[in-house]
Image (cartoon, rainbow, N blue to C red; front, side):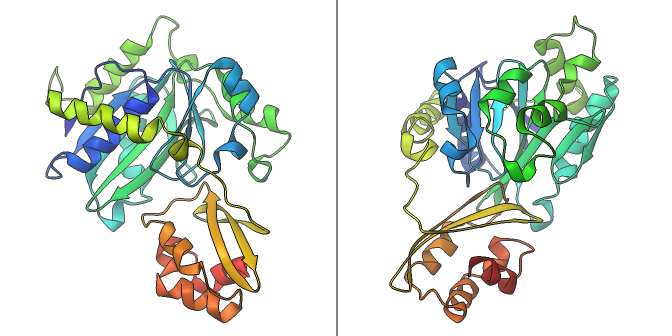
Amino acid sequence: MLFIDNKGNLDASLNLALEEYCLLNLSIDESYLLFYVNAPSIIIGKHQNTLEEIDTDFVEERGIRVVRRISGGGAVYHDLGNLNFSFIKRFAPEHFNNYREFTGPVVAALNELGVKAELTGRNDILVDGRKVSGNAQAVRRDRMVSHGTLLFRSELEDVVHALKPKPGKMISKGIQSIRSRVVNIGDFLPATVDMEEFRAALLTHLFPDTSTPPMVQLTDADWEKVHALAASKYRTWDWNFGESPAFNLQRIQRFPIGEVDARLQVEDGYVRGVKFYGDFFTHRDITELEKALTGVRYQHEDIRAAAGSVKADEIFDGVGIDDLVKFLY
């Protein structure tokens, strides 16, 4: 495994651009690890409706950057007390949604530091029953990224206020529930341990056979392309917010892969437009299904035929065609 140096950049747009550039362009004969810290930012899951996930007044007041990532899952808050990690490697079906493979070394490193961490549920790392890390994955061609957060000494009250609670995911009322479910790793370490020491300790565990991790050597030309990607994609309104289509039907259901929120515009008995939102994970492009459904009659058999034509049960892994049609119709 090789380590990718982000040169200490704190810009979420640039760091996510760096991650995508490395995912698409580095030799897939090797695996990679990227660490980065972002200035206050909200990182939106690929399939989410941004305006429904954030407190826009709080975000604008605090100057918090909003950036969409290429993986599914839910929105997360980043600040200078949050360390982010990305593992990049060759894709194989057995790796997707297998978070233990990627978080296992991180969990082991935390335990070595004296922080009793464990992977639980779909994709979270918990300490003392509370969340310190959320994880997500994305697939591009023959390669994949599995990335996650590590709440080290993050401003948890800002986490609470920046993200709007999703009622379907709350046990009790929003703010109290969010605040009670998260905790900083730093609470379980001596107060003198800062971010640099924490980062260095993790690197020592993840690269145990060397005092200096073997590095990826990005050229000036590589960095120019990273900056260009940040400007053309990760800093644009179209990518980060996008214009939500008009709709007159909404279907929401939680499946094992996560919450799926379907918006359909149906006119004269035909589906004129459809958009899927949610915190679900998929290694296929959801627009394949959206395009297949657009223009078909809003009838059970037509929806089923359209969903079957693109193998929607593979797009929504584990959700059968019949269950999907029942959900949409």
